[in-house]
Length: 259
Image 1 (spheres, rainbow, N blue to C red):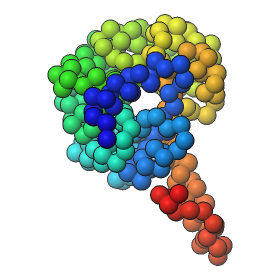
Image 2 (image 1 turned 90 degrees about the vertical axis):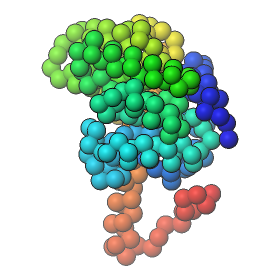
Image 3 (image 1 turned 90 degrees about the horizontal axis):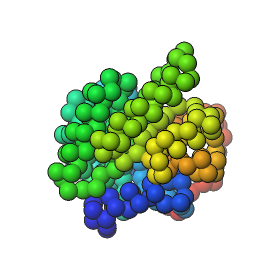
Image 4 (image 1 turned 45 degrees about the vertical axis):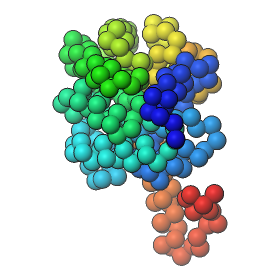
């Protein structure tokens, strides 16, 4: 098992490697082990909404933090790969949250700005980075801005300018990369990648976002999928349940973990 310092160094290097870092988000040990065993998997990312749902909570920091960190810890202990954890907006204390994430075995994490005023959001990033530095781990902070995700009817140029300003503020405070979820077109993506620099732009793989090959060519460092894999998995389970309940025989597929 690699040390936490080795995992942190590996996660940081994956952001600057020529290949796009693709992260298929997980929510428990079973999903983490299944994703980790897939060919090409180099790191594991958790999804806060998916973990919350697995415990019966809505997204948005409604899950008790102890449950979230417990789930992150079990996932990190179950795989040899670097784990980056979605810790929402920091549960009221970004510094303490990053310390707890590192104690659980994570070597990276998402931190949402929730469109708070830039000085306040930048201060949260600063606190998170300081906590990671105090732990002596090269934690990769994926600072998320919701500017495009919550754009509503704002003019595109205004949203883009806001995103750029926020991203630069977070990078200046020590964030490893800037996470910009939303259905972005390729021209916007190119602008953001050029603004933030190599290895700095992180996107969410929503339907309608350009394919990974195009994103890599545009300068994107990292692509993750949030709670979408869980939703897809539960959809398959629902279809299977309906089929079995209608009297269909069980399909011939190996059980999870038996391959």
